[in-house]
Amino acid sequence: MRHRVLASVGLMLAGKGVTIATPFMFKALVDTIPVYASAAASDSVVGDGAVAVSFLPDGLVDGLATSSLAGVPAIPFILILSYGTSRTLSSLFQESRNAVFASVAQSAIRSVGRTTFDHVHSLDLQYHLNRNTGTLGRIIERGNRSISFVLNAMVFQTFPTLLEVGVVTGCMWHQFGLSHAATILVTIGAYVGYTVGITQWRTQFRKDMNRLDNQASGKISDSLLNYETVKYFNNEVHEGKVYEGTLKQYQKAALQAQSSLSLLNFGQNAIFSMGLTTIMYLTAKDVMMGTATVGDLVLVNGLLFQLSVPLNFIGGVYREVRQALIDMEQMFGLRDTKPAVVDSPNAIEYDPVKDGTTIEFDDLKFAYALAKTSPKDGRQSLPSRPILRKTTFTIPQGKTVAIVGSSGCGKSTLIRMLYRFYTPDEGSVRIGGKEISEYTTASVRKSMAVVPQDIVLFNDSIGYNIHYGNLNASWDEVVEAANKAHLHDIIQKLPNGYDTLVGERGLKLSGGEKQRVSLARAILKKAPILLCDEPTSSLDSHTELEIMTNLKEVGKDTTCVIIAHRLSTIQDCDEIVVLEEGRVVEQGSHNELMKLGGRYKDLLLFQRSHGNEKTEDV
Image (cartoon, rainbow, N blue to C red; front, side):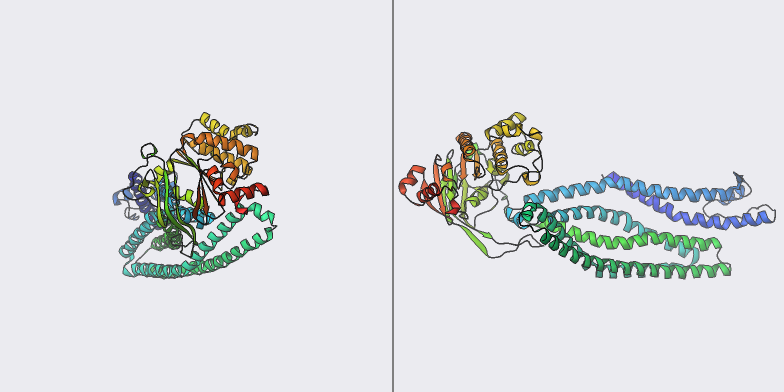
């Protein structure tokens, strides 16, 4: 990679050298042609010393003065050929530099993009509950694009332009004196000062455009993800108006940015034109006084116009670098966001065989922070909502324990704590007798398989979504897991079988089919701890019974936690824990709780009598 950078710099310097030399060749051509034209008009021969070409030895020039090539005097022919060659070489060096450096820029983009992607995945669940997917994608996309631009601008535009300005100014001083050099420096100083001042003023407009662009992208993403909801309530017009409102705000900021850009461009051209006019006047005066040639006038004009290209680009570069830095600031601000749940420096690997899989919840207290996304760190503290209140119970190794209770009592929160999505405000969660925080998060999660309450699938094939549970599993194991989840026969009836695409978030599948896919990939993981958050809520009674039978079989050698609203599905569990407002109110087997005649019995009898097996309806 270092060799590519050095090669790119070498090509850049060679290109600049050829570019600066080109106007001098044109000057020599302009000064030479009149000599030959005059000689031809008087039918005389160009003598020694009549032609002077600064970049060729005098002896060689005198030798070529009377020669001709292809019917054209040799010296003008050589100058024309040199001029064309120099312009070609300038382009060749520039494009070669771009091609060589492209690998460097793309490697940097890939590296930063990957680390940013990994960092976003390392952030805690609370951050992801607050963020907007569309906005986050735009921030990462613009940040990655800006890295390439800044690298190119700083290495191959800013430094080379400063070098070219210095060389051209030195040439002017040497060729024409201090007045010409001073004119160039004053012009460039005014040009840069004006560009910096106006660009700083324009920066706020660009920030507003970024913010509103993020909002518009987020709105598109949110609206399309909720396509069905929009249709259910006939709110297409409302969605369009909300989106149009964001676009109107963006339009206003964009018009301000464009108007200020026009002002910037006009001012830059006006300053450059005044400088060019001044230096052309000084050179023309020298020509009329006989101290300069017409070729010198052409040289000055060529050098100034040649300088205008990088100068104009520098003006654009400054504008775009400011914009790129704004984009990168947002992305690196994202990278600076710290996850709420991190491994301790002394964390050890969790070994379920050695440490065991007994799970203990001890005096847990936890409240959800009702946070909104903050531009700086992704969260902003607001009043919290208590969920767990001194929750204490144990899940013995190898046992199947069900957790039941009304909605909002903290059942799913307990599973998320086991998965280290959250940490308790007070109390502790232990596995194998040790605080869960003493283990690395990755090793704990590796030992757990989860069937979540809200199932979201990748926009890929059914086979891929099942295989995702264990990417090292063989295809036979994938099919076996699908069979255990009562999914294989359904897949076989599909036109593309396991290659059938499930659509975004799995919306092409029914709720029951998605639940089976989720079960299959959890089974495929073959983890010693199985966490099921309502694993059969979207299934019919017959399939539910079959799935629970299979879960019982799968859970023989595992520690299994099942969250359920339908109490009829968990009566065979080794133990049932009843939660109420974040507290354990009852605990025991089905028969023990029925004899107790408390909350569990009331819930079960209510469900049986009302034919409704959802506890939250109680």
